Length: 235
Image 1 (tube, helix red, strand yellow):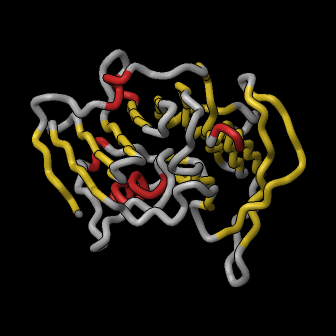
Image 2: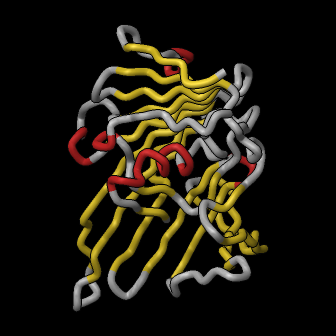
């Protein structure tokens, strides 16, 4: 899992969100969303950007926990994420920080595979930024979210009634990966990172699915809120 400081959050939100892919515009532009509204964790595996005929609603929980001397874990940071996908591959990802319990998301990201447009909605300043034709070489592929390669193993298990495969991460020649206890499981057919756990001697980073509903979201989920200022990033 990837956690980051404030200076990197905008770029990491764009690159490591559930949408996957490389969300920079053709000119290299990155949407300017308020740092305070940006999530600070994401799995180390990028799911395919577009998955067809697999409508689903998923709730994720992402935590960073400190390990105490008696091996107990104390949660220091938490993020809740809601993910929606319809049969045509449209998606919406909502990020809720710890201060938005019972309220709306801090940030929403919408993907329209037919219009090739990604839309960033910031509820903090009521703005909408639309990026058309982003560079997305991994639209239908699983991709690493760092300087490593993915190895899909033959290990299988069922998580939340979805068949999953375990993924190992291997260093790219010339790079080293911090020694950690890792566990990553993905639902290949559904394009969902179900579990990503990284544990060091000092802390544990955990991204996990806590709820799955295999149903089509309401069409209104994918509409841009009214009354927001819209800015077009690229064509």
